[in-house]
Length: 343
Ligand code: PEP
Ligand code: MN
Image (cartoon, rainbow, N blue to C red; front, side):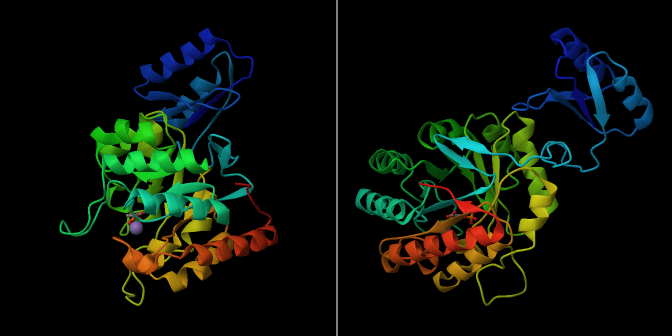
């Protein structure tokens, strides 16, 4: 249930609404960033909804009360019909413009990340990706450069002007990663790490949340809900492939998820065709399929020398191939009523 206040509602009127919500045993949540105040009523509404709606509707300053049938109340499009645009410096993520994030799977060295940053920027990318803390399936695999990797990312941002997206795996490291990153990435393996989601929800940085490989769309939206419920409204959802019986590819791109998510939520939705396929030759066709399906952007692994990459070389594009993909996205965008944002 949401309570939509009149634009001219006063502070005492709002305070009274909040008090009455609490009095009925619910938690009021004021949606930030909207013109008129909207109060979400959080908790299980299993008592007489009609009587409750009437009680709230009659309070001074209230425009109307609306039931939200989706269980993911804060991320539901029912509560926010307009698509969210997230501002990162001069960049807007979501809305009509398409955004491309690109870079290596892992930050490996100063030379590697600086070269990758320059090349993806040149090709038209808007955001630089690169993992410093890596969630590897095997503890014997390269685990990332950690804090040193964050320093190198900051240097690459300085050199190119590209904002940084990088993964955080530990709730206690959200603050540290947030001092370097412009966008915090929460990886597929941590999609239901609720302590991490909550900590990211208390950060002022936007969160790029990747879908768990074994998660349903509704679990994915509920994970986003954890971030929103802590007060951080800026979540970007990322489809990155799911596990199915098909083993011809690393994962199966759930193309359906893109329009399903766009219909369900106002949050921006992007596609990661690198992890969803695991194969560089499939990255461009699946990336284009994602844009055609309505994605608000892409996150793509690009490495100056994929053969020698310390992680995910098999699915990494060389910078030249990536530049061709950006061109193709630019040509496809108007066909689906979008445009590639300037970088
Ligand atoms: C990554 O982006 O490099 C990564 C580990 O992705 P995911 O969490 O989707 O596996
Ligand atoms: Mn990777």
